[in-house]
Image 1 (cartoon, rainbow, N blue to C red):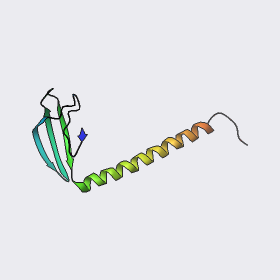
Image 2: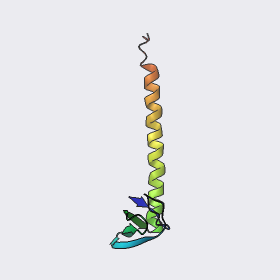
Image 3: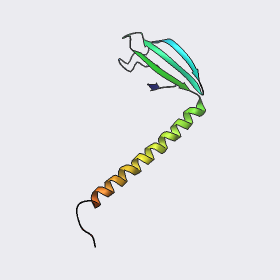
Length: 87
């Protein structure tokens, strides 16, 4: 699934011409099923309201920070679990 506010680029061939074959309103935006005019690939775009887009970006930043902290914590435990005995 693609989240894209401005372009409808086919994820398979890169073509920019796509026919909308289905549109569904949803809270905060619109979901559209599209058909690539060049290769026939079907894909989905979600057009978000500005508020929903900002909220999604903030959540993405928080998720990246949490995953980074988990990775660092995992590396720290690997270095202390080397089999050495501490008294």
